Image 1 (cartoon, rainbow, N blue to C red):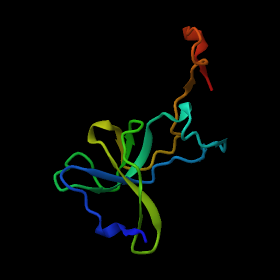
Image 2 (cartoon, rainbow, N blue to C red):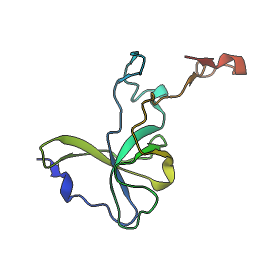
Image 3 (cartoon, rainbow, N blue to C red):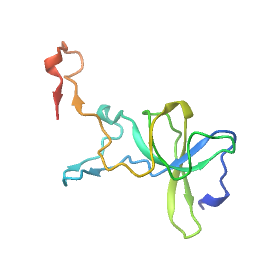
Length: 130
């Protein structure tokens, strides 16, 4: 049985989020990008939507979209809303929030540069755009 989302309340200045994307993505131009979760290129910040905030949180609002440093969130907890929709919520670290937006950004969430193979000699021209 899943927890009822409306019964979960964060304490102090904690922030709970939902809709953190770990799966495949589709760019605005229609390019399919497979999931990179668990791979070295999957080490990246991610956008998520604020689900709930603690009573003393003053910087972030419920419904806002935030960009969080890689790995600065907890494992997910599956919950269900009053309409029966299931989703995952996570707690993020306040100090790991890099950006915020009122609407969901429609950009792809990964870095733009790929590094050469591990152990190779690195020169600026080795970093190529992909």
